[in-house]
Amino acid sequence: MPLFLAARGLAPLFLQDDPVLRAEALVAGARAPDYEREIGRALKEDDPDLAAELANLAEFRAVPLSPALLSQVAAANRFDLMRSAGSVMRGAVFGEMTSPAGTAAAIATDLTSIGDVRDLVREAAAYPDHDPLIVALAGTGLALTAGTIASGGTSVAITGPAKLGAGLLKLARRSGRLTARLSGDLLNLARRAIDSRALAVTARQAGRLDLVAARRSAARVMRPRETRLLGEAAESVGAIAGKEGPRAALAALSVAETSGDLNALRRIASRFKGHFRAVLRLAPEARRGLLRISKLTWRIGELAALVLGWTLGAFALLTRLIRIVFRLFVAGGARLAGVLPA
Image (cartoon, rainbow, N blue to C red; front, side, top):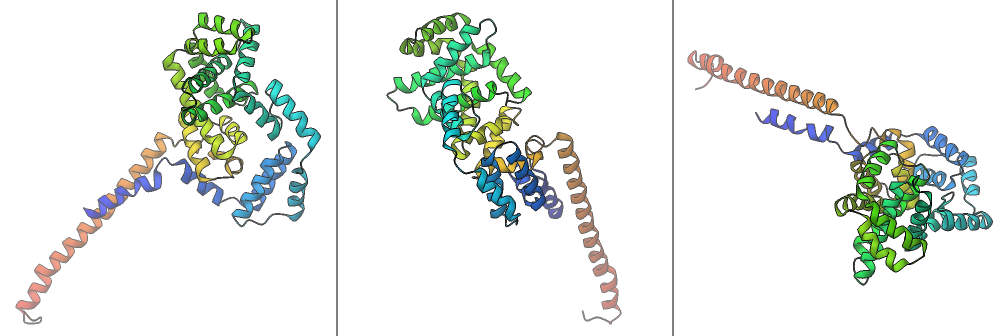
């Protein structure tokens, strides 16, 4: 039945597990009060960048906002040299991310071996109360740097996003921005990944600031399979940062619960260029519920599509039967009686 097949084929269009389409629908439904509420929250949280991003998205979507509120956003985004300078220092030395400048400084440090060595030394000094995830990410970062250097820089295109992502994962872990589930999964992976004996050697070398030796031994700290899995998660985070900036990647880490979520958020970031954080704020469902559709919802929707298909098919069959009966009995009888031409 063509109608049945066509109706069944509509199910994936209406019910496909596509976070980008659901994000688009949720953002399309946002109105001026929604934007103004979230802009006000961003200003109270001392996040003028997010406030500006929301204002830009409203303008892009032709949603009019209060001129007074837009003036507040502009004033909040005026560059403060003293504040930014202090943020840069704290970001470079301590890995803090209280502003875009501080975040950039912390990440810039982590893109070199300095940040990884810093974290290994800090965690080694804290043993046995060290953080295995920080150790694993720092070891992964050192291994990536070693691989890039060993290849003469030819693998920068491959390791670059993963290296950036590893640094952002460390920052998110340190600042408590990882969701409990994602943090737990990564922590379990990190515990399996670390070779404690090799870690002790690397920690001693890092403590002596022997960067060359630390880079060499970093490859032995991490077991290959687990390192690859960590690298895949880091690569997704780095890809989001490459499209939308480090703070957007940190926002993704604050809502993702699985590596699959990171891939979904990566797609959303590609669709909403320049407005990713604003979308996460405007569409709370985009944070978790938007990332996955429940199996029950899918089954119910698919069943509804099947019922619709059978109904349309049955109607088509009934229509054909009526036409056949009409031709055989009504029209045929009329011809026999001479009412209709043969």
